[in-house]
Length: 259
Image 1 (cartoon, rainbow, N blue to C red):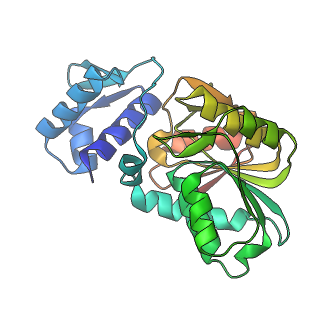
Image 2 (image 1 turned 60 degrees about the horizontal axis):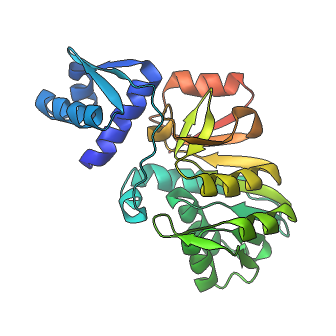
């Protein structure tokens, strides 16, 4: 496991549980206590957690930092692949319509859709350059890439042109990625323009499927784009804390554990 991914998981655990200790983290991630202390020191400097004697407690500040796409591709790779495979069960009937949001896990499901027999039978709208190119390379004939401005860090298309187009559209299913998920703040991300596109897809889809690996549970980013009540399904991985899974199900969200 990369140090960055381990730190993301530590941050998520701290946010969910409120407090973590060095000994338990050392055993969980099979690293030395000194490695955990360095991780906590790094997260403390970034304002993600607050160091305390023997461990750390959750920070209440909203995150704003974004990681480049190539960095995110290396984070939780096996979990994202499993989540993308599980998401295939929620594809609409042939002839149906799909919104594909931007993000590494969404890009993974786009690749699987392109490989799927009969995958060309869906109408697909996306604001993700990698997803659109992947589907086009696999000869999916009905793929629409939204127009607008490309954000280099995420390779997502955003802006007024995208929003005006989405306002005229409806989809059977929206597959949505997120930087973070909390029970009170819902789904959130760092950039307001990306949040606006995500929100439009959520609003204009009959069913909303959120692809969210466990490192994002309990984290909070600056811009909320959907509440828990706005989503139908959350697909996550086996490392998701039971507390979060149970809390989402109590709120009538179908939670699928991929793996």
